[in-house]
Length: 87
Image 1 (tube, helix red, strand yellow):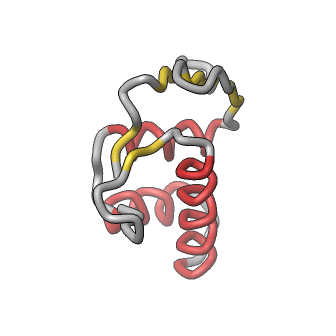
Image 2 (cartoon, helix red, strand yellow):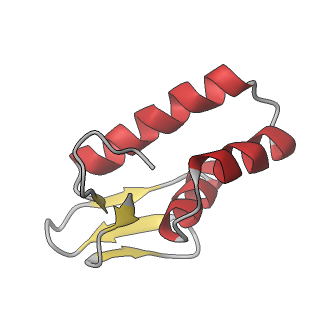
């Protein structure tokens, strides 16, 4: 999964999609997550970082991660080669 080239992410969590004109605000953990996705980190690397930093269990993280990725895809923030690909 990659962040679409027309999507701009500010340091304070403001996300703007130039293609659709949509904008979103992310909380600090959402910003951290989208930056890791933008850096094309693997799911296991992202999960390990979040499990260490935040009080979250493995299953809760994966559920929240996939929901977040689904929202990103729905709002055309990410591009995918495979429609079933999440990482």
